Amino acid sequence: AQSVTQLDSQVPVFEEAPVELRCNYSSSVSVYLFWYVQYPNQGLQLLLKYLSGSTLVKGINGFEAEFNKSQTSFHLRKPSVHISDTAEYFCAVSDVNSGSRLTFGEGTQLTVNP
Amino acid sequence: ETGVTQTPRHLVMGMTNKKSLKCEQHLGHNAMYWYKQSAKKPLELMFVYSLEERVENNSVPSRFSPECPNSSHLFLHLHTLQPEDSALYLCASSQVRQPVNEQFFGPGTRLTVL
Image (cartoon, rainbow over all chains, first blue to last red; front, side, top):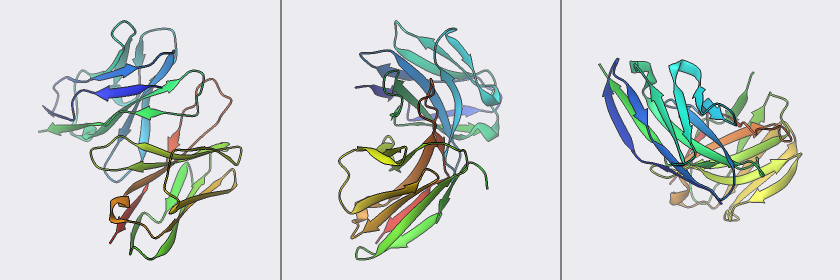
């Protein structure tokens, strides 16, 4: 079984500042890792995913994440945020042997202030 | 219509009512999912259908009854719900038997049980 911990429930930042949303996972087997974003009154949209290979993954809207196997982390970063990045962000993990199941973290609310 | 659609978007029902949530995917996928999203809690996977067969049922109360008549449609039948069932219900779809099981989400149905 896997578990995901998102270390910050809320992250307020000012526009154009950098941001990091933290995610740690626990699993006894190899995993795939995902970040999803949920804008108000919408479903979840995939931002980026780590499958294998390069540990730095680039996604949509200027976001990137780095897989760190030794620290079992998959933190999401953006060098300069916009007001439109205000949303809830979810980290998720999938066991490579049972791809039908995603385990989600509790989410991080990113609020970008002017 | 594109992607994953859900109807209705909002639903208010009494504890003795019977209602149904509908999900339709236009992506040619062969797996569909129901999730429950409650405030301050991780997304809870309720049901998984793969190739129109239910392959996962995560200890969901019997007052929730899923139905998957074909690979494009998924229903969640509701009866004698409790106020604690109020939540956002999300539908997702994916293509199984791919290397990575990326899930695509609908916008959700906001359910309020009075």
